[in-house]
Length: 61
Image 1 (tube, rainbow, N blue to C red):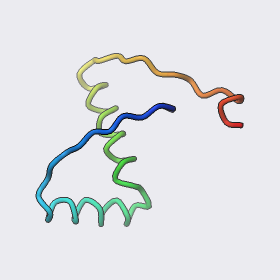
Image 2: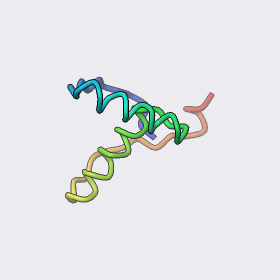
Image 3: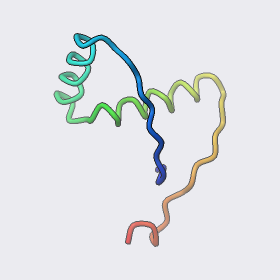
Image 4: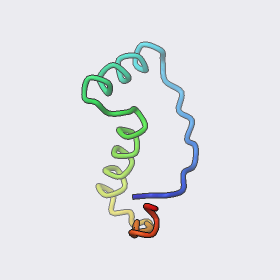
């Protein structure tokens, strides 16, 4: 799990945004969770490796 975050601004039309937010809510997910998963999947599909930092027990305290 990533511990640092960076903002990504995406412009979409209001109807798609509302439909996306409604679908996410119906699946008990936040839009950010879904977008992060989409990015991970896209990177994996294209064979792109990126550094990740493992969460340790000390990080949770």
